[in-house]
Picture 1 (cartoon, helix red, strand yellow):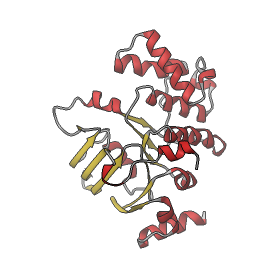
Picture 2 (cartoon, rainbow, N blue to C red):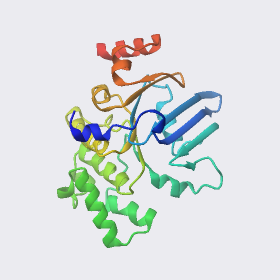
Picture 3 (cartoon, rainbow, N blue to C red):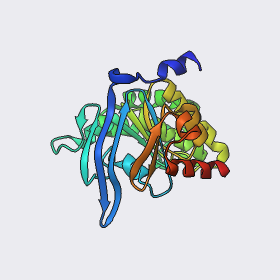
Picture 4 (cartoon, rainbow, N blue to C red):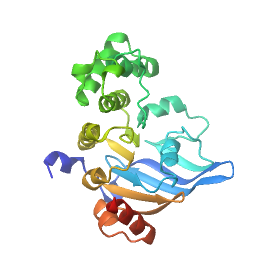
Length: 260
């Protein structure tokens, strides 16, 4: 492990400062009970990887953490802000919570620089020059400064996803949420996105990742959370979850993915 990687490890024990505290999260879609009392606490600088079978509630949980989905009950604190308090300015609070989706959601008529700068201008009210300077710096962090004047249609899928990451980090969030960020990419394009995520993690960014990239989870995660049927079944360091899972449901899932 490099010194940079070692320094990026979260503080452990009682001194660890939680950035995300979700308690007792339930989510109903009509009669469908998708989340069944989920508790998730994420410490500053921690990378938490959420795995589990399709339909287990992983993406719904992630979307509840920035209120793209409204929890049916429970509490969510992010960086000391009560997201479910009616007095909370959710648009302002979301500036602390970057999110990257499976789809890139870039404006096709705007360059990479324009896509990243737009959020800075519309969300934070930055002037054109400052927004573009910060956007270029964000593109530099994802190794795409040389593609700043390219339109999405001129970029590969992996490059478009890295622009989407740059758009999120340009707002200087306190935590980044990734919802299946590589699942829409051809296999040969996945590596570039994961490399950027690894660099963010080494820089100390707090991250919650829902993904099927198990090799990345083993190598980069501080903690792996296994969900099934709307509940957290088991959580622990990657070596435990992948090497010696304690719950039968976890063992069955890990066994299945390692056969493929």
